[in-house]
Length: 272
Ligand SMILES: [Zn+2]
Ligand SMILES: [Zn+2]
Image (cartoon, rainbow, N blue to C red; front, top):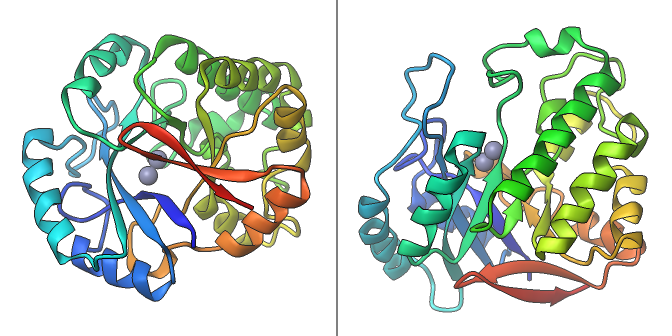
């Protein structure tokens, strides 16, 4: 049974369209063994939006306790957060996270050149390899700058809204940057998220091989990487655990032995 380590609810994430009760119901229907609720925490978000981008962590934990009571006894409901990284926030995140009983912390970068490409597509005027390289170098900087996290979210976020004919992020787009990023991740013992919403976005765009680039993952293994985490990044009930079976099978075929999720900030393994 898989654990889906990346999900948002409408209680605390401004862009989500499901309640915790709906999320738990959909996850049970999808035969997941558990989910991590990882609400967006986007301090100092630069783009103009009506959405609520940060939530009160002090209000989250009492709500989480009430959700836990509504989950079936054999279902693992875990408390997480998705931190939106910016360089000036690193120290504040490292100070804040240990104060709360999170199970699992995702560190993500939703920005490039001071904007979220979801709201502002100017970055796509750059060539694919220039843009993807610069983004992955920033992920390496992010991993170097922060300690209090477990998983790097969607390393391919910048590809999601790209308009290049072949938008998929590949190792060849950014080999130097990928080596830096993957080594930093391995050195710090953090886990690489495979974001299956990214897989779905590529599939919908007609990309023939929507699963993550083989060379990125084999390079990660070559360098010593073993920790991979599956997250659907669900914002509504339609995508819980999406593409998990085939992604897990694919990861196994590349030589990975287990999936990683986190309970009480400690890594746990699901054998493949
Ligand atoms: Zn995200
Ligand atoms: Zn997310």
